[in-house]
Length: 252
Image 1 (cartoon, helix red, strand yellow):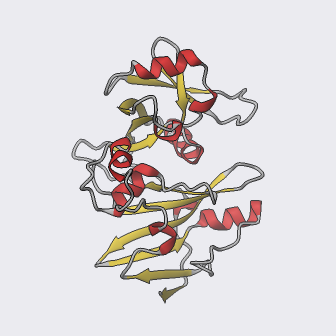
Image 2 (image 1 turned 45 degrees about the vertical axis):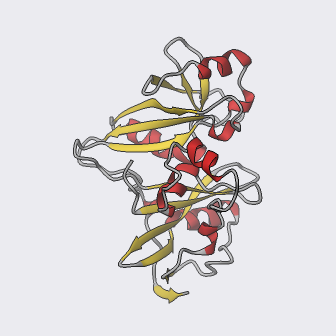
Image 3 (image 1 turned 90 degrees about the horizontal axis):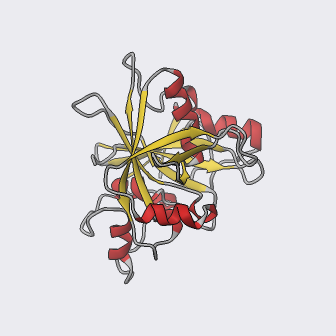
């Protein structure tokens, strides 16, 4: 996995459960840079989203030589006794130190808020984009599906299905095995982009990347790799909601 150069920050409205990409974090020339995206404006108009305390104004570019607290607070301390096992769950070396790599794998989610982090993948030498994430919704699966997860093999191909009659989310994308066991769901923040790429006739493929032990919390139980073969020289996360709202700079 390449170290991502850009991370998106997504916010979930607690009422509608919709996700919006509200900000973009980059690291270049020894500086971190955060900007709100048009997704934040959309979240404001549809769900009354207001700016985060760390970034109080929408139309600014925030720069710092240190990683902003809203992101550092989403990294597990290396001093914790369970740090090595946490990194193993993410399928990363315990010596991995790049915060972008760790946040891209973990999602940086906390129980105290409704924010998550995900990376902007870069095109590899074969023209493919690779996206890594943990499947969601495992806590609601039947026992037979959990047992099937225990049998999954590295790089085993999985299948996507649109559950348009899902009573909780009509855009839900379930992930299942070839022998028809549902083993989880795509994260909601990914759905818009996956549907857009399918609409553009890009090839989207999902495979098992790492299966953690049964004692692992459900949120890290099954990690997958989604590969995009994008047609017509397109790019991932290239729609307006991912583009920055910029008027002036603010150094913090």
